[in-house]
Image 1 (cartoon, rainbow, N blue to C red):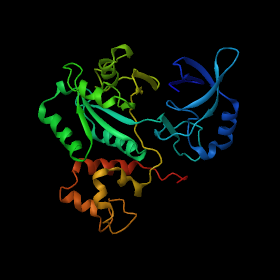
Image 2 (cartoon, one colour):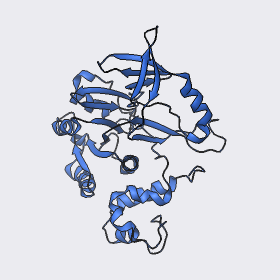
Image 3 (cartoon, rainbow, N blue to C red):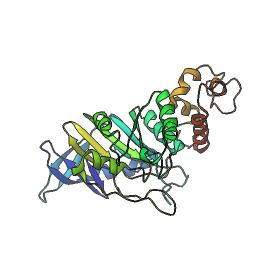
Image 4 (tube, rainbow, N blue to C red):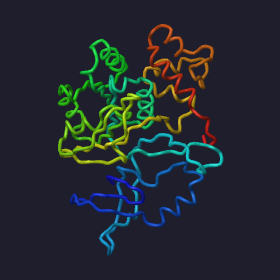
Length: 313
């Protein structure tokens, strides 16, 4: 499935033909029956592999959605009336991906390491390979760029510096995407669509401008869409995000998704340690010894404070 708009589900068959489909009624009935336990907004998602049949009106009916190998999701914004208990529903961004490519910008909007770390946690918790792109490097001095490049490189992530204006990093990024299904994700205004247009001009995605008042990006992509760009290479362009809350993570598990914490977690005195206030915390000791950066630890504490102890855990 390559695009979803309202109740229209657009699929591509084995011959590359595009077709507008609808979900068979059984999906909605099953969803209505189980929704109090599902906690999700989505029956189907971009990237799903489905069986469908063509009807007399030359549209399709989806009969079966195959099990996903993985998917990327976040907590959806609260919807009035969606739950009497107040828990956040899950919003699936895309399914069956090979790489999560997180786009950031060094300026306009200003680099936001806490937002980046939240997206990384989502990728790590979904067991997806993560690539980080720091875009608009033409707008900042080398010291500013190298600080963040070195930090994320030092903890094991593949970081690519890009500039659409100066054609920096475009060839490297294209090689990184080659042969994979790539989810392109990031905050509004960081240049996702501009980068994709530079890589694959035929996509011709709409590009927005940065607000002169807020210096934040404006949404140009309104729904996730998957496109084949080369042989065996696909990109999923997504709407820019402003609220980034991982779904389904417990406080005591969050540290497992900060990869530099892993060598120390098992040394903590308590196996339910949240690495915040507990005595005998090996992670906190590693921070004090500069074995874990303060920037990442502060990001961890910031995210820890926002995790809701939802009733369905």
